[in-house]
Amino acid sequence: MPVYQKRTYHLASESAVPDYLERWEAHIATLAEFNVVTHGFSRVPGNPKAVVALVSFQDGDDPRTVIRDYMESEGFRRDMAGFDMSQIERVDTLLLDPVDTVEELSTVGGESHSRPAPGGSARLAGKVALITGGARGQGEAEARRFAREGAIVYLCDLLAEQGEKVAEEIRMAGGKAHFKVLDVTDPAQWNRVISEVEAETGRLDILINNAGTNVRHSLTATSREAWDTILDVNLTGQFLGMQACAPLMERTGGGSIINIGSTAGIMGHPVAAYSSSKWGVRGMTKSAAIDLAAKGIRVNAMHPGVVDTPMMDSGSTLFKSLVSMTALGRAADADEMASAALFLASDDSSFVTGIDLPVDGGFSELAAYGEIWNRINS
Ligand SMILES: NC(=O)c1ccc[n+]([C@@H]2O[C@H](COP(=O)([O-])OP(=O)(O)OC[C@H]3O[C@@H](n4cnc5c(N)ncnc54)[C@H](O)[C@@H]3O)[C@@H](O)[C@H]2O)c1
Image (cartoon, rainbow, N blue to C red; front, side, top):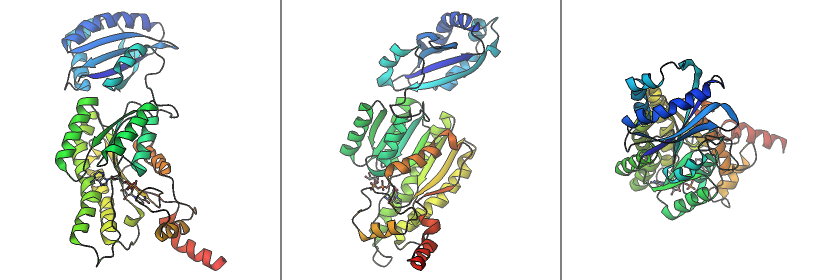
């Protein structure tokens, strides 16, 4: 499937716009030599200093490489002869979901070049996000939130029926979402999913390694099988995810990876397998952050405290005990995790990499003395 892109040219002055529009007629022929099809171009209503064009690139062509080659060509120099290039202040590009392209064609020239679903502020406009464990719980909340912020979201999970349903609901609400079956422990499945994402969108900006599992056994009661399963999903799954996604992120021009840990990876914790996997997430995140920095990829770890999701039985003694020792006195809603993940995913955190971000209502930092304080004063 070709890659469709909306390109908005912001010019320094209104007077440059008619000249630049005329040049698009010439561009069409030259771009065609580079297998770029121009579907439409026009002024941007409400913005007298902007020109918008909708173009598509051949299957497998990298838009950035094609545009660079085009700009270095004789044809480009010919088209732009006599035009003051400093008049082009900025070019905004937005990759379009092919399924929505027909709709986009009719809106070329519209004021907005990004279309976040209602309720969002477009902090992820034009970005593509892959979220593992996206069928329910925190991954689902992150998928819904990121779509509202303008991202094309890929929800990946073992739970096909639930995942498809969430993706469909996001689309019904005006967002862009696709579900893909993915077992995070299987490198072949990762490769398939990434190839599909690249073919469909040509880019990947955000990965949330969120899929996780737990069996709460003591050290001596943990079977080798349970140990392997928990380490495979929680730690190896994130390792495989970063390996599979980093090359496409690099070709995209950079990105943000968020590895979901836990307070069980910050503090001493009684479940050896789960705790070991989450402590591992922290070390692996820092290694990856060093390794991938040169490729423009930021890697951070986020550590939820007690969150009301299917992983936790909200009627259990464990849940109630965790809540009672959480400084803010309650469990988190999954959407509060999505808010923190949004910060790490968006350009708001552009200078943040390699960190551990606890999102735990004060549990990891305050629980011990908080409990003592409460006992003294009760
Ligand atoms: N809920 C909490 O209180 C809490 C606290 C700290 C950390 N966490 C972590 O947050 C993350 C999200 O957990 P949640 O609370 O949303 O739990 P959840 O059980 O609701 O969601 C986990 C998702 O991961 C998916 N998954 C499991 N194994 C998979 C695999 N092999 N491949 C693909 N998907 C797989 C599940 O199908 C599920 O949809 C996990 O990493 C978890 O360890 C949760």
